[in-house]
Image (cartoon, rainbow, N blue to C red):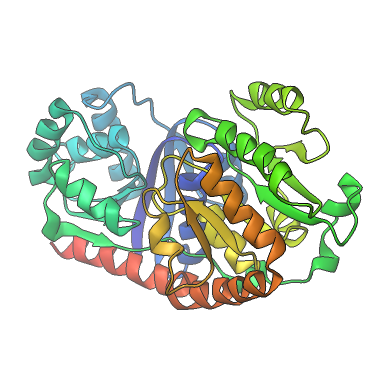
Length: 367
């Protein structure tokens, strides 16, 4: 059985951590023997330890950290690791440098962003590329950006993130969200569960809701789940705009399925996305989607999928008009709900993802 070390600088609770947790859950003890190393502890460490995965802290201070690379190489020797799967540039460089001290290991890197690197980083990427075994891009634009950032295109494979449809199945009656917030069953509920950070677009989302109140008579509520540095400024914006009745903050929640099942629509307002787990989870739970036309969102939401609407980022008119259509055109909403479930089954199904990812592991090992 292949021994895989999952290497992550910050083991928190965002999409990358969900990616690692899902891979371990479906591959561990069937195709691989999973191990985990991290720099900063968080929720993911707790979850992997509960699954019986050996975890170890490795301090990674910067990209070119040879002390960390030696420690990773030593850890790989101790645990008999065949392959290191990493997810951000710091730990990616660390793993590639570790090959100098432990030539046995192979490295797979999953890129979770669609972001251009600066000139110095592009140069160092080209220099490090000769050590690289294989890379995964989670969306088509992500692969294009990796190549533009200096990596070899022939060793990059696009594998969309995925979810288990069975895990998100269920009925509206199972949710306690509306009861918790005192919302009637016929109220239209929109959900956004992004972290409150600059690139998640909450300011423009709230501005869009303000405009929506002027163009529709349909009662609605926007539920904002999550925490982060811009949570309090977002609350202040809602108070300043007089939207306390339309916008509800519920904090960070672990019961995300409960939130999906109590909602009618999922809204993504992000500036940067590769391929959002939250979007495809919401679709698997039966929700239509409104998403910004950024990064890999167009790989999910498009006319072929028929699961929702793409809107311009930072454009309250575009977003509020899309919301209005979802609120008022219930036939369109129903078609999008059907399209969401069909699209997940066809393009973002968990077992296909697991097989494709394990196939990349094999390519890296045999390189």
